[in-house]
Image 1 (tube, rainbow, N blue to C red):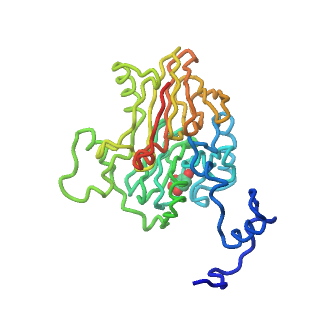
Image 2: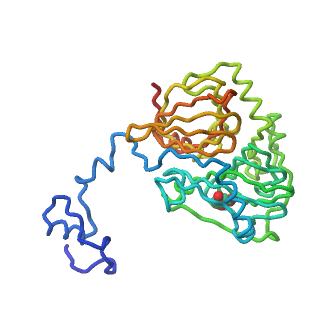
Length: 363
Ligand code: GTQ
């Protein structure tokens, strides 16, 4: 059967000029364009590249350079009005796309003493890495989690969450979300409610349960039982303890934050890591298909990151600085600031591993 009746309303051409002919006869190029089709053979090697070709570039947001602009946002809008007062970290290779890498959204969120960012829930999952806090908190399904500097806090998909602040100084954390992945699947939903309809306030019992290897014998485990808080006060000593077990030439001492229920990544889409590189040492080059956001915690050092063009970019990183390591970029870390270098990172490894895609290459 053939028909000349368009199945969708007439629309303007995709581009202003005539379609790119790509060496095709002009009439043919026009005809397939009119039919909303395009030749594969002119683009196949871009669609199915021999190796990852990220648009994201190695980049750093030195905290001292961005902090003032973040505080200024606090004078321009309230947390209540903004819903979430965040400056999104846009990779220079993804400007206008609200993402730090192709798959990861990252932003710096500010909350001021006495403010409240209202309850909402969404199918996007979030993790927070605390940068500054003397009394900021997140509540997840009504359980309050107090945030101290360098704590990791989770807000898995579809959990009600709000933020507040009972302290004196501005509260800042890095938000890492799987927004680009949920956008790719067009599977985003969100709900907002007022504080009077908020989930009942309750104690966060999960740290005590997990520390003891216990869980409630009755009731629904889903009711906020999962471990949502990985305090710096507990993960930092664990990194030192792991150091006694030896260090890897490509990674130094690197630990993954896990969901104790599964032993797997903290979120289905995002993984999180703590890493220590001993003073005066340099890791051997490694490249991974994960794209990563790296945050400095202690010490000063350098990330030497290869680019697609075969050059290298050197990123100086210290406490609270936020950097990007793109997919498949060779990475070496130099702890050359005179002390041990401690880093936190999050990546899309969880999603890649779940799909059987994750690879790494050690040289
Ligand atoms: O705190 O819930 O940076 O929903 C972006 C979207 C933070 C949040 C972000 C969000 C949140």
